[in-house]
Image (cartoon, rainbow, N blue to C red; front, top):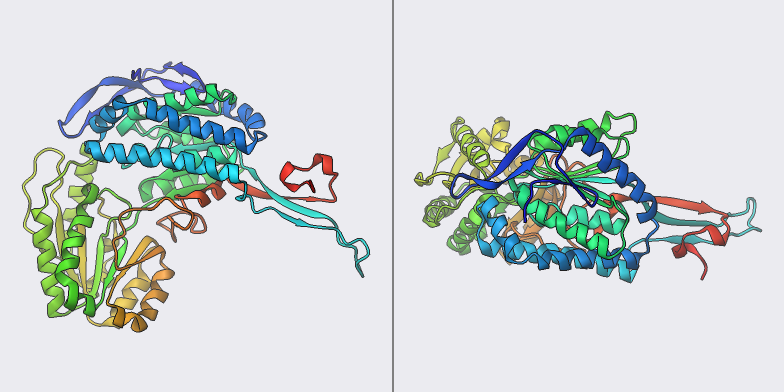
Length: 508
């Protein structure tokens, strides 16, 4: 049952006077549950409990943390149909998407549990002493990793489960030994409360310290600002807009003790189509990308928002087919009236720029349903106008007709950092793609060959991050087992007594 209250550790609390309701975007009506925004006192108590819990939690064994993560997955599953129903009511997304995202969330938790049990993630190093080395003796040095401390996780708007309350940031931080305080996203606070209740049950069942997890409601930005400014908070995880991520990054770096903010932000995910691909499979790629652009109503950070190719008659055919196919797909509901409004405004701003031509016919939509679209522009206009580089969060893509390959490479070189880049080409063209790969790999975090960027596999080889502004630190991934590295730091022990060393560094 949804109460609209905050979880301050294991205690439910609703001391504040600021309340709000989530929106059912399909019906464009408010949901019945009322949520109470956390007060300063509640925020202070949550961070105090997290700081106290860290002293115990950081010393927990990998097996104990693995049992905790497995128990969270079990408790999420035990929420049953209620979680799916609330998810759909708050997001407008279909039941199949909700079930799939729940499965991914549980898979992430259990994957980190398995990693902890295997114990090979720490990358420890032991360099034995050489006391008789000349001209200077070599000391005994042993390196391991320790957790940073309490982590604040900001729930994302577009993934109410997999990138929110018990999503990848929370799972990886808990696996590292860091308590987590979630700043629940106001668009799906009911979903967040249900998942938070599952985490609290799992913590109690597995004997985790009170304060290892808290869930705070917030209608606006004030709760997030207070959390990031709190000296007991040692790191931040964020998935969302460039504006929001950059604001948190600046706040964190202006603290007396700056802390890392691992923010995954905007991306237009460029797609390069070769002449050979246009000639041999242009229709097929147009059909495929119509589906990719509209998948999830275009509300993915990996949505292909930019398509690059050298101008040719075949490119015109591809563009016309893509524009026709994209409007054949039934419009789908966006996550919130604010997101629909922002999408419409940004799409209008981009398509009104000089040189931009709308290719697809307007799709009449009602309420919060998106009108998907494709536009085109020449390469010179794109190079001259930074407004054409911005992410239009929704089912929209712009095709850039380049004069030649040199201009195409110049466009890639001038792009802001991106999560992904894609190359569509024939095998016979592979020898001629080296320069395209060279440019892309310095602008993106993942390169796809003959595929679509939508869809992020949860596995060790996945990198979900990239140069700024796609993320605030391109050295880390927000998806997969290696995402745990965001919440740990190295520490070396020199000439240390064996009894005082962490277990993973002892000779035994």
